[in-house]
Amino acid sequence: MLLKNLLASFFLMVISFSAFAQNNKPKLVVGLVVDQMRWDYLYRYQELYGANGFKRILNQGFSNENAMIPYTPTYTAVGHTCVYTGSVPAITGIIGNGWFDKTSGRSVYCTEDSTVSTVGSNTTAGKMSPVNMWTTTITDELRLSNNFKSKVIGISLKDRGAILPAGHSANAAYWYDDKPGKWISSSYYMEKLPAWVDQFNAKDLPSVYMSKDWNTLLPINKYDQSTADDKPYENSLSGEKSPVFPHKLSTVTDAKKYSMFKTTPFSGTYSFEFAKAAIENESLGKNTVPDFLALSISTPDYIGHTFGPNSIEVEDTYLRLDNDIADFLAYLDKSVGEGNYLFFLTADHGVAHIPGFMAEHKIPAGNFNDDNLAKKINESIDSVFGIKKAIQTVMNYQVYLNTDLIEKEGKDLAAIKKLVIKMIKEEPFVVTAFATEDLAVTVLPQPQKEMMINGYNPKRSGDIQFTAKPGYFDGGTKGTTHGLWNPYDAHIPLLWFGWNIKPGKSNREVYMTDIAPTLAAMLQIQMPNGTVGKVITEVIK
Ligand code: ZN
Ligand code: ZN
Image 1 (tube, rainbow, N blue to C red):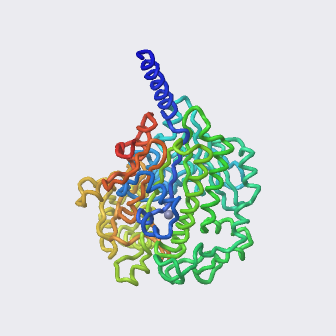
Image 2 (cartoon, rainbow, N blue to C red; image 1 turned 90 degrees about the vertical axis):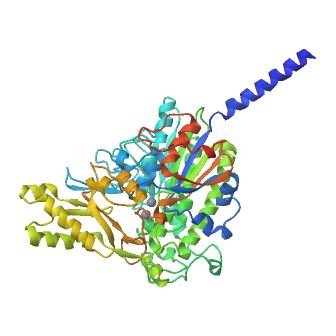
Image 3 (spheres, rainbow, N blue to C red; image 1 turned 60 degrees about the vertical axis):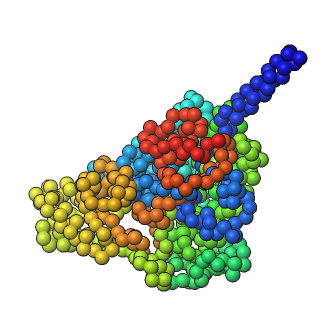
């Protein structure tokens, strides 16, 4: 009797130990960043979503309903960097998609790298690497944690959406070159594309997708979350007379089709197809340690900028994305196994409504042009101080002064700065303007101030910052954009699903910077070396 009990408890121990050993780590981590997905899209289109996409994640996973971006400006490169580093532009160095570099006297692109070359095409689209990012990513830390046994791959139509999440030590990052319509990489990662990438490219799927027109997935009268199809404040696709369905993609047969493809929902499906090919051919999730796939779907950003959040095009894009996600999760269930992968979904930023649409409903909003602002102020400074081009450029809602020139010509820098601030403040769309180095002593509401301090990097930021009225942005009268502190740009979805995730929902405010440390806690590895976020404990089983 006693022996029997002893044996039974021994077997129980063995069983629970092996269960523990099996589930100690996930086989694969999948990060899915949906470019320009506002949090409200989870619910706005809910009636038309299927059961196995967003709804499956919401029902079986955990949703942080109030995940906020803790910095400005809310742009793509900054968002992807923050998700994967748990850090902010003041620390990562990625302060925008681009910035002005005073040392070289030119604008710099976030992932440009002249020391590397394109792999997979004969354009310059592959002269890219993460070299401008100063911190490690969660993907770097995963590689560092086990002597580089984990495989890390980044995939996105956009170079920055693939490169920054994959980190410095990635096995590969792939992005879309819209000249030849192919997935490419850079010599930073590899000498030549793997055979499976060449084979995938050889199928020329963009041409296949572009040979059919973009019609609505459902009968168009079902799209009751959106305004009428034809609106003067929507942009048209290249070659179209008006922005209406069906978008006649099949009439575009020249080389432009590969670039236009990005602004169709099929480029999202194409990205998921490539991700599946990567999982299969690189055997992701079949390793002795966790692998990491950093996938970013850029498509909704291209479409969102063009047609705006209240368009049938955006609604249709999310219905199709919902299907793509359902299909992708089913694929992961089959290839990695349900419960064996840890999946999270978030966005790099949201987006503002189109000012023209807001005007139709008497809601304040508007647009302005940074270059016109710079030109106007430069003319005034020239007439007062006798110096041309005192403002080098206006980028990321910051003014870069031509400090070297002003000093060389012996002009009064402080007086010029004062005049620039005064003139910006006079603009009707501006609330306030101040020297960036005076941020801490400027009177601003605390959340706004904190976001700007997190976004301020003395080595890369401009000299003067300005804030605009809510709903106003730098851009044209057609289409829309993002980049500001306002909730429509800064409130993002954050969903967790799969391995070790406790189903549930929380309205507690958390931040984009919390994602990387939460992953670090779950994977039992070091946080990235610039992380300022906190672990979201409630998502962990
Ligand atoms: Zn983006
Ligand atoms: Zn964008």
